Image (cartoon, rainbow, N blue to C red; front, side):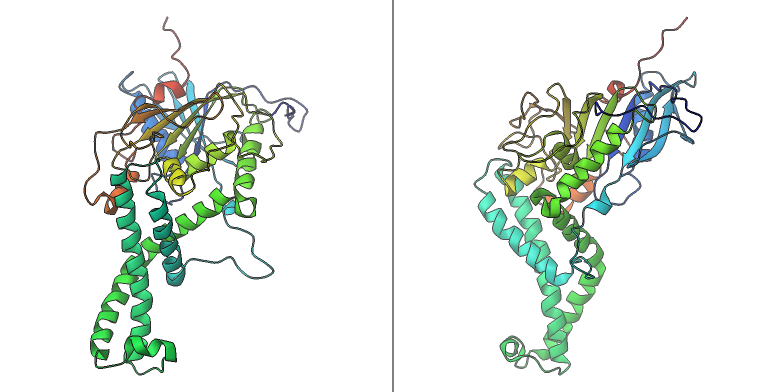
Length: 398
């Protein structure tokens, strides 16, 4: 935490009692689901700890737990003696991801036309990315299939909507008449209706993906200093832990897009300003389903010219080979474990493969489900190897 952080006092002038419980700050992905929360992470970690000391751990509500601005208090894990072994917080950054609009105009919200434009750009970018080593060619084919399917559906929805108007006798501009003139109007109306219905059924899911892609592009390009703003907010939150009384080790867990937030914060790009000293109390960083290889595929210089703010940071990366959005940080190989080809300063991540599930011929169409499969309610999780490193060691028995 920042060296300048002063000890806060309560209204009667006393400093908070130091709390040595280890902390885990969860940085979520962009999706809004029950699994993508610090509460569910807490339950999955508790379940992963139980095989070591069966029945010894439980969750309690953290009512009245002090926290700095920017962090939302989650659950506390306690042992059989009611000793706190891990306190969880959640860092919420969504409000900082949208660029400021000009004047009174709202920010652009992706729709069908915007979806067509973004998927078209993605197809062109992916064609150039085929020569880059961040992903193997089988995964690139899967990405092309997925982007192509989105482009066809989005373009079809626009074409079908206009075609339906033409079939109903609405006058078309002269440059569109060649597409819709002739005796095919009944067929256009039928096919248009089918595509419109399909679009309506998949619209929210497709536009959710497009919105996530749009937010990721803004973040990677640092549009309107979005990346710097999110990183600064996380810095401020970590820096505020000591005045709130927390003095124990801090662990960071980033899932999906949240992994990019951690990467941007601890390995800033050249020229980024940091108002806070390196957070020395941060003991480890874990990234799960991290899309860094995907970013390196489309933006090959993204990890160049960065500095490590903490040279002894322990970085563990968890991936599933069948998750085409995840990374093992090894060029040209999406299933190897161990040290990767990405290193910043003296920090080199160690990748751990979770499950043996490999890539199938049409993996892209189920990869969203795989991407959400690292943990969940009443399910196994990837925390088996990680959980013991988060919690306080057990007190010796009498």
